[in-house]
Image (tube, rainbow, N blue to C red; front, side, top):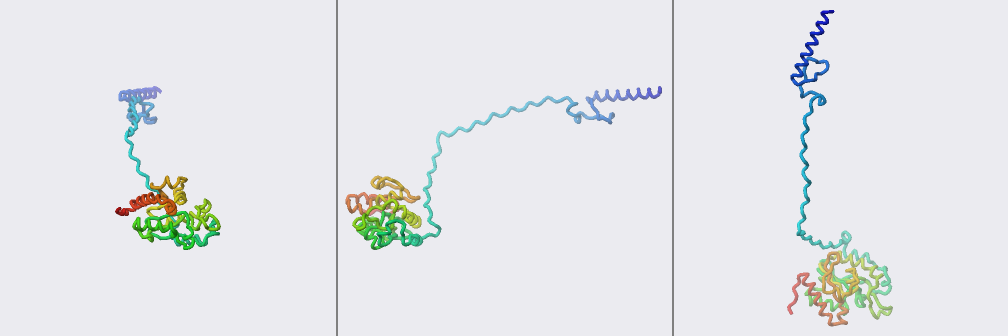
Length: 283
């Protein structure tokens, strides 16, 4: 018994010596089951090792100030002109005429002699658009062949120096609008007649795609420009229809009734010549 007690005391002394040695090394923890094997401070659990002082976080950078707007605004890019709306794929003037057929879409078909479709064709740089055919046009089936048509031909050929065959001529409606059943006087087309027929005019212009359209008189001008303004206010200045330059001017029939207006029509035509790059004739 005494020997056991002595051995136990020796073991206790040995353990105390080991503990004192570990503490002198700065170690106060060993794994359970391995009393003789010291554990380095780097492997000690955070709860048993004195925690290091926290490192102060770097102050957050102040938010960047938004860049000051330049006092000078950048110039606004000019808007591109609206593109000319395309006709149906592969559509031709012959296709449009075939679509019109023996038209009965409005009341004008009851008094016409024949449909007056157009004069001229593809490749025309300028198109002249009137309101509707008159007596001579109704008989011949060609627009602007009466007295007003002769004046228009003179404007084109003698004034502009272009053969009539190289321009395109058509009307808003394709049948003659008359004042009465005796056919003694022509009239402007009525709204329902324009609505029934004008879609064909738009298709014609989209297929031909002239550089300039000259509208002759109030009905054609008001329709293409979608305005209630009269020709007197609109003529002499440029407008647009689906990206095409439009110059309104007086109808040749009006000029025949009011000869002084010929000077204004000639001024408008000279603007058209300038737009097309056609040299004005020497005075």
